[in-house]
Length: 337
Image 1 (cartoon, rainbow, N blue to C red):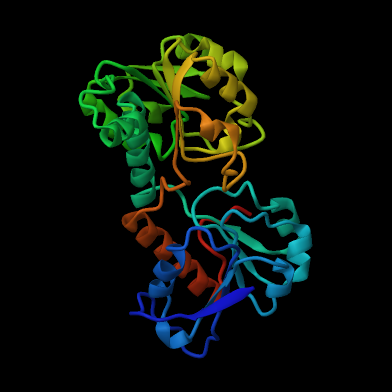
Image 2 (cartoon, helix red, strand yellow):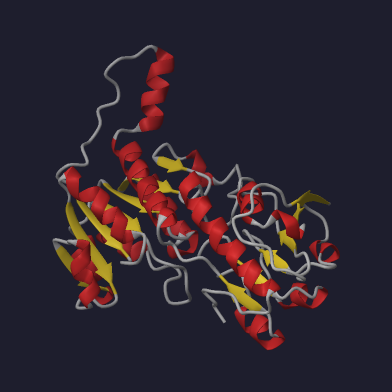
């Protein structure tokens, strides 16, 4: 089933004389605020059409579609062959759901939006939110209000903790800036700690992947900022979780597949980890009856780290520009292939 939305609102990109309207398909009804933000950035005189697939046979909805925005939908070779779209444009940075080799073989452009500016700052703020919510046991505090209790629970301060930023990319940079005034000790875990860019993070110490044990053994809060690749899948498993001190925390704002699910559940259930703050999951949306969600020391949010007004303005502008480039016969910016 689909519904069409005519592009409207003030044009932020000039219309191209003589060019035709574009048809854009959002592959899912998740992240609902994305559509109006993009709609406002498209040039109204062109009459571009935004469609939203909300179930059923997706391949049947591809007729006349020029641009596919995957959201969390897998875009594979079979789906590519079912349509004639020219651009797969991710709303954000992660492209693990796109078969890049199949797109390359078919001459389909694939592009993303780097996690910079409003997006990276938004995700960094959300990481701090999860840390504070874990340390102050926010769910228990809310339950205490409903029970008429005062002074319960006893929280922990962020000040004085050792926080490890695992992955020193565009999200870790603003996160380091946000954390420094809290009086934390900042560690970094990256492939090359001698890279000149590391100095900009203001870390107290930085470790290579080969020094994971040394780094994690002194970490109170581990924050995963890595992209998901074949090299980082299950980057944190039972061994790495055991290296963390008893009573430590894990925050994942990267991708669910960075962590071994069974190992995380075991470490939380036995109390080795004091808690986990998760904004990303192994299957999205995560099933409502997933055992992890039943654990009292898990705080979960529905992949909203980058879902803010400022972030969406930046992302929609970048995507609208790529759509205009496609209209003019030019390749997109931030091409993955």
